[in-house]
Length: 404
Image (tube, rainbow, N blue to C red; front, side):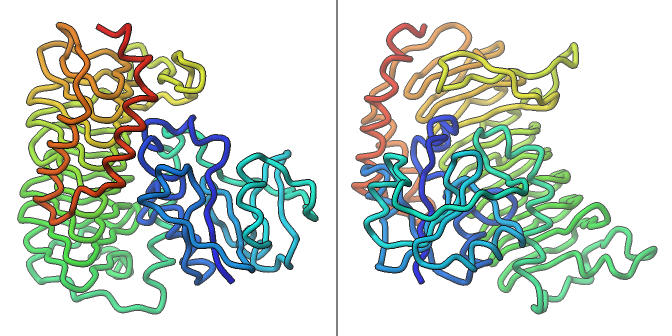
């Protein structure tokens, strides 16, 4: 049986993260949503997404394919129900398709929400679907914990170095079981505290001297935590990302830099982002009020229901040293932010500037910078990346036309 994760009609609500990727390529906890389903179902998966994004995330579909909503997080009950589906059967929740087992003809039907030919049952239990980027923040600790046990069950961790201080072990020897170090990882002269949640350190990752980690934390493959960093619970540091300073309850999808001192709290960053030295995010309003965020589906700020919410930043965006982001800031893709004072709470894609003013920047400049950044990670800037940037550039023109 084949697995396909399909974009739902909530894809635009997840902008700017889904400007450049399918919903199921978003990371929550240690794994992306697709990787979670692959681990539970033990099937390799692909994506059903827009035609342009599919150039980078291709679709593989067969005559017996399990289609699962790309923003749906798995749990044991739901996984069991989906595994038991027979051909032609599916599951819906309040009119929204969660899963269907059928053939390649489903692709077009799913994209136009035509489920009339299928035998669908209503799922009566609750489900976790990531409809907005900020919804990742209150669940990330839980997802790190769930992914940790999913990935490490029945496996042996690399030995923890004698130079590492394992906080809490003197009171509870079981603490050691809540730290897992994959092969090739380097952890020396650091403090690890897994009392509040597990600490996962991926293949070839590095934790440098003097770093302090309080779980639950996910340090993904080939990522790095710099000397003296303070990483608090709920932090996901995606593959090939470098982090220094302070980070708390935040997700960096991958291939990004927050190398220097500064605070990143209750935030989500995409790939190929760069935060300059001493960049800080506010994650709490001075009056403790509910944080609002820019909603691309409504073209206005909307309430999040969260008291703690910092920065949502799309791929290829960056900021200069000493940048200070207000709580509830959304930055599109390919933005270049600098200057004294607080930037606006909504910064469109492909702009350059700061509190003193912004102007549009050419997509060719973003492609050139991305090419150089990718080369440093031995990644090639592909024709698919080029096409995706061009499409987003055109789609976001309306925001730049009146933005100064």
